[in-house]
Length: 215
Image (spheres, rainbow, N blue to C red):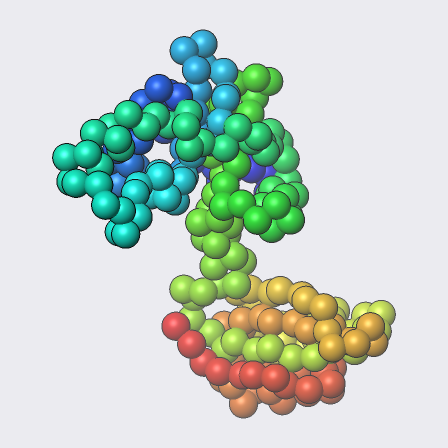
């Protein structure tokens, strides 16, 4: 899966000279948490989040009057609070690389570029939606988390056992186990009961961490 398949497009953007209160209202109206900042030529010059805007407001401990605060806030522009150094991705970036970049840099979203033009925005919310799909969060079935030995052909044998019993996989995820000798798998099976799933996978796993019927 590539970024272009899940990014928000067309992107909502603002200019650097927009007052921060106007920008905040736009974000609230459009239900977004961040937006790229483009100059008059459409060039990306920064990114601003709702947190940046809210942090620009005077603290509750200020001695300024309401009128003074409103006047001062009215003078603050997006360019005064935005992040100038912007991490970006291209449309053809694999989605896991975008996720890795966000985690490593502790950011919640990145503009998506085509050459020098912003064509979209990929955010943590987009990644959460993908995770829900991958794990079959809204699909009915028996959900299992188990430790599986790091042994050639073991996962294949497990999936074959489920298929032979008439079950079908709605989701399958693989994660690092407790040691290099095993791996943690979480999967969801449709068409079988908990008891049958447990019986069929038992010869191919080390331990069942969790099993439940859900959704």
